Length: 325
Length: 263
Figure 1 (cartoon, rainbow over the protein chains, first blue to last red):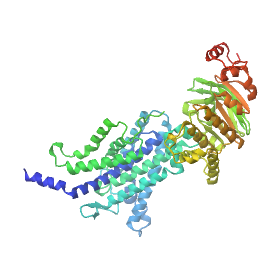
Figure 2 (cartoon, rainbow over the protein chains, first blue to last red; figure 1 turned 135 degrees about the vertical axis):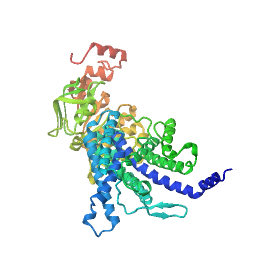
Figure 3 (tube, one colour; figure 1 turned 180 degrees about the vertical axis):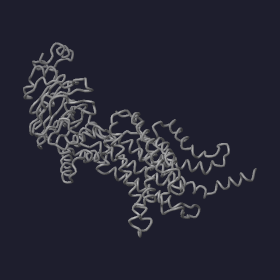
Figure 4 (cartoon, one colour; figure 1 turned 90 degrees about the vertical axis):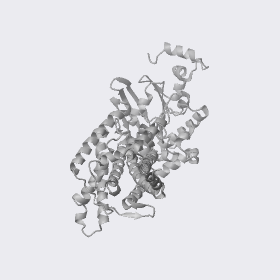
């Protein structure tokens, strides 16, 4: 047997490779899950398939880059504050701005479409995507815009595997975000949102303002997209910063959503992690397999999506009939 | 308290569903609104509660006055805040939510903590069964329990006027009795009730006033005891001969062809 292949096989089988794969899968998976959850919340509450989700992610990252490095807000007013605090505040400003942008988009472009067909509304978001993406890319310019984060390329060594500080931050943030959403769903507004998602007319009959529910769901969706966009533009992903390919990265949230089921938040989380892990596993174990070619890992999420579609066309956690009147 | 005056409603700009109906609900009353399928009862409810727009309906004439203010074409959330709550036809509970969450969704406009607690206590004493099963998912409840939940959900808004759309629909006779008793109890606690029903017997035996609709018009109204004795009501709603004995469905159909209301 060819000794090279033997060495490759030994290397591949080593537990550290598996540990690396787990870290990579978790890291990718949480990004997809953040995107997918935002998408699903918007879809559930408003019945809008938001194709502009990737554009929102790019905008979020660009707003952080703007605040932290380009216009230096709030850093210019607090020169003696520690870097991490200034950056965190920049992120906070960007995220709040994104919540506002999400609400504005809903109010201006989608509210007038209430009651129109699912398909027509989806095309509106497709138009929004083209508009927002081009506008943001124009602002970004030809060079990637660094986000000015304090993490850099620092890693934490865990023995078998090293994990980037950004990845730790990302996993913590994703957990906090999911926890916050779970809490939100138990709040007065969250219950109103779930009621609206289930039966819009009955929700209105209870005096729930459906318009406000739409607004808030878009704010949440945009914020989650922005958070995902930030982590896409940091070290292990795109260390150089946000550029005009950031939105394409977000595309892989679509297989995650379809695998999990369009209208299930739990499904979005599971789908996101599944896509992340399958991509990481393919990257780890199938890279040396020559007949699959290079970059095979990139299409694994879509293959997985096709498989799920054959067996369960409405996704693992989705409702069988998602059409509503 | 509630006064509907000469109301005309058109669906999709062409279908005239209500042709100038008027009705009134007084303080502390139970008012029954009867009519066959398609008479316009539910449309009347939608017009009062501001839900016509979902169904492409418009009020083209007339007005709805509640407690002295004009609520024609008002937003549903505003109407609920003013004190009109409804129990929709077919119960429409939020099946994916638990009983508790359904009640909290019902109390959405009721932001005040102590108001919430008192409404909650009232609902729980009216429906002890909901208390027992408070954590259960609403979709798994029986039809009767779902009807209780739908009524409880509306009561969480602490309404001055409760409108019920066919609460007896699809319930066993014993449960219809129970719903009837609960409506009386709610009314005795001071809430006015507008009861939309096809079950004339159930509605007219508890109402203080009755209206009868047909094809978008009010054809009769008056004292329920008198309505119950009316020959036409007996024929159409109770399936009885004028003399009082039971009648076969064939005769009823024949009678209906022969005679139209007010014609």
